[in-house]
Image (cartoon, rainbow, N blue to C red; front, side):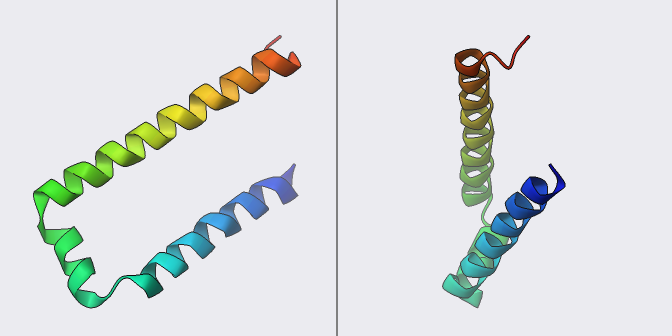
Amino acid sequence: MTAVIIRIALRYVAAALVARGLFGADDASAFSTDPDIQAAIEAGIGLAIAAGTEWWHYLARKFGWEH
């Protein structure tokens, strides 16, 4: 189980490093200072977390993990 958690954590770290390389200093500045962009990012993260939770619940019901 620990290996699975480490693998997932490494994926998130890799995604953060790729995003850092794709965005320039001007883009990063816009993300940190524009409240509209921050609100959109927060909403997107919230939707992603909700979708992930619902997907996990669906899999739990499908494979009988919820008991």
